[in-house]
Image (cartoon, rainbow, N blue to C red; front, side):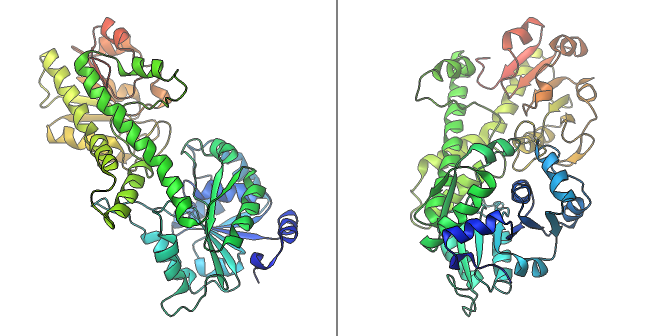
Length: 458
C-alpha cells in the first residue's frame, strides 16, 4: 500500500526519503519526463516510467538510452538501470497503485487552430480516477494555462460521480518543468522550481521531494494557477522579445545596420537581456505557451494580450522573410530561382537537438516547394531520415555540391566553421542565406559569395 505522505510530519517525510522507501511514478518519459525519472532514480528512490510509446518503454528496459542528444544523462541511465532503480511500462493500471507519488510529464501541444491540446493530460486524469485511492500525491510538471489543474484536471481525477475526493483519496500539486532541451542537466541542477498545490499543506511535501532529488531552491506559490502563470510568463517574455528583435532586424536590413552588432553593444547595459533574430520561433514551449495565454485571454476578452498576438504574428512570418532574402540574392546573381537547387542546413527547431516540433524549417521547405525549387537538406541529427516528406542527405557536402544556394536554418555546432572558400569554389555565383548569425558577412562577401543574413544590414 502506498505511503500517504500527507499524514506524516516533516521528520517522517525526511526519513522516508533517507530510507529510500518511496516509489515514484513518472507518466510520460519523453524529453523532460525521462531525465526527471533518471534523476529521481539516481537519488535512490525506486522509479517507474510509464508511457504509451511501446518502443520507448522497450528501449529503456533494454538499456538503450533514448535521448542521444541530451548529454550527461547517459551515465545516470546506465547506473540506475543496472541497479534496477528505474523500470518502464506501458501498463498504467498496474504501475500507479504501487506509487506513493505520481508525476505527470505529458505533452501539451496545440492543434491546427492554435488551441492548446490537453488530450494527454485529460486521458491520464480520467485513468487516475480509477487507480488512486491511498492519498497519493499527483504532481503536474506539464506546462498548462492557469486554472487548468484546478478545474478540468481536478474534475476528471475526482470523476463525474465524485468517486474520489481531493484532499482525501489523492492530493494535487504542480511543479512546472523549467528545463531547456539540450541543457536539461544544467537546468535541473541550478534553476529554482515553482511549487503550488490545491491544499496548502501539500506544497512543503512536494518541496521536500524535489529538494532531495534536485537540491535546488523551491519557490512556494500560493496556488497551482499562479505557479503555471509564472512558467508561461518566463517563456512568453522570450517569444515577445524575439519578435521585437526580429522586427528590428527587418528595419535594420533596410537601414544597413547589423543587428548582431547592435545587440552585442546593447547587452553591456545592465538591464538589457539579449535576444537574437532568426527564421521563426519553434519547439513545444514558446509558441505553444503564447497561445496558452491567448487561449485564456479569449475566455475573458479578445482584446487582452495584444502584444502577445503581435509577437506571434511577427515570429510566424519570419520564414516568409527568409524566402524573400533568397529571392533577393537570386535576383542579384541573375540566376532563376524556379527549378534551382537549394541546400538547406538544419531542420531542428533549435541548435543541437533532435527535435522538429513547430520548426521554422517546415514552413521554409513548404514555401520553397511551392516555388518549384529542388531541395537538398542536411541535418546532423537527422542523417538520411525523412523529415517533412523530404529525404535528408548524409553529409554537408552531399547537400552543398551542385546546389545554387545554401540556406543555414538551424545553428547546429556542426555549422560553426563552414569552409566559405570551398563553398565559393563549388558553386556558380554562390548564394548563402544565414538565418543564424554564424556567418561573418564581410568574410562571405570577400569570397565572392552573394550573402544575405537576417538583420545583417545586407
